[in-house]
Amino acid sequence: MPHAVDHSAILDRLAATRGGVRNSFTDLDPARTAHLIIDMQNGFMEEGAPVEVPMAREIVDNVNRVSAAIREAGGRNVFVRFTTPPEGSPSWSTFHFRMGPAAEGHKEAFTPGAHYWQLWPGLDVRDEDLVVEKQRFSAFTPGTSDLDAILKGHGIDTVLISGTLTNCCCESTARDAMQHNYRVLIAADANAALTDEEHAATLHNMAFVFADLHSTGEIEALFGG
Image (cartoon, rainbow, N blue to C red; front, side):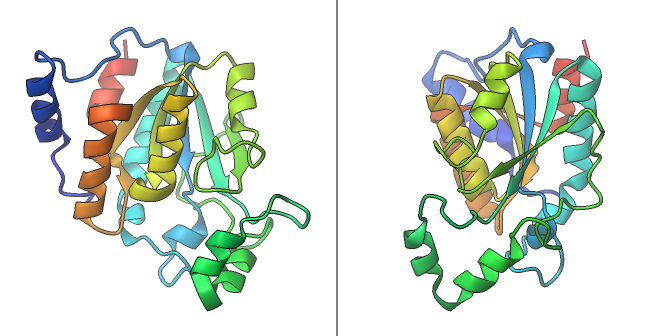
């Protein structure tokens, strides 16, 4: 079961501050929308994995439902995969220093081709879907992912975010997407954090500054005609 966090209550508080408006975007064009599925990889999903997020296993059905809705409406699904940078890439020494002794294992786990780097087998990935690598928490960090250029090449102006962790890579990507002038939607019950409290804090940040919030069912209705 996904996080026990009521995104509607967050939107109620938001609406009270801005004349009853809960979400901003009402003219969504499926053909210009990309569903970004963040870091749903074995290294985050498996029991005992290096960065196990147990709740991530609970959101797979909702992620797949969102993918199906976007696909059927004519949008794009983009599976964004955390990847250890190759030798010669821009340094991320601060992150690795903060990780301490676990850093080397983390690098090895998410090296291209490694088991933990692979997408979770329960995801509904189709031939027409895209898979894009990222080397930082945000998929929009310049020089560490081709995502922005790929989205622009497909005429995308709206991104819908699901995946894990809500309060790390999903939030980082959502913040930067908005600051790159994309319209951002968050699938509130298709994101996973380690605790309900962390998940709720990010949803609050998103709603009040960066993104619209919708449940999986609401997304199906929005993109189902």
